[in-house]
Length: 243
Image 1 (cartoon, rainbow, N blue to C red):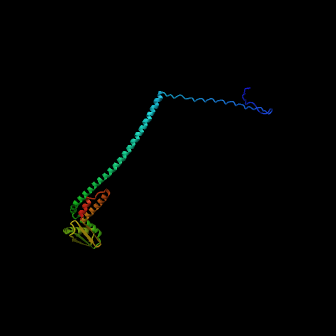
Image 2: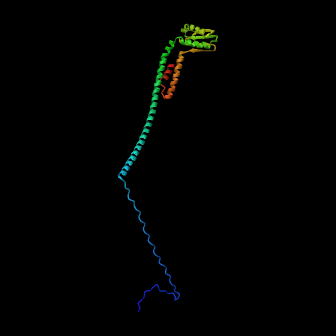
Image 3: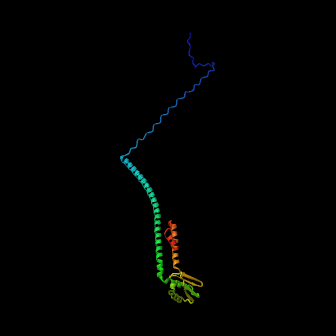
């Protein structure tokens, strides 16, 4: 018995004569394996001399010191600006307080002056005697020179003293009209009242003092508005004195 034979795939079953030569594809040659790229060379670490290290360290120290000084200066300037602002605010408050203190001193000085004037005014008026009356008579004659008549009223006790004054003043001014002197109980010894057809004038020391006190009172009222005072003091004293 024949032993079985292994089938070979190279056996052709084509009819005879029709067998064509089998084209065997060329086996491609394997591509060459690229050579690995060389690894980059690592540069050696830098080396510094001791002098370079010392110079770098010193430069860093200088830069750090400069930065610290700049920061300290900035904080100092900020504190100084805050201090100046607080001082300016405090000075403004002190200025206002000082202004009020000076204002009170000014008001007290004014009140004292008013009291002095009030005490001295009657004595000063009495001391002037007939001088003020003579001045009023001269002014009246200069205005009433062409008037036909001029009448002077004075305190009863002053008639004898004033008649020659009036006559002499009329002669000096060239007044050619008629002169008349009359007594008036409501006038003080230093006051007088002069009248003519188209006008008149007088001297009233009491009214003059009232006008002075009124002017001072108005000034103090304006002062109180400016400084916020309570208005106590001379204003009330003046009102009380006039009442």
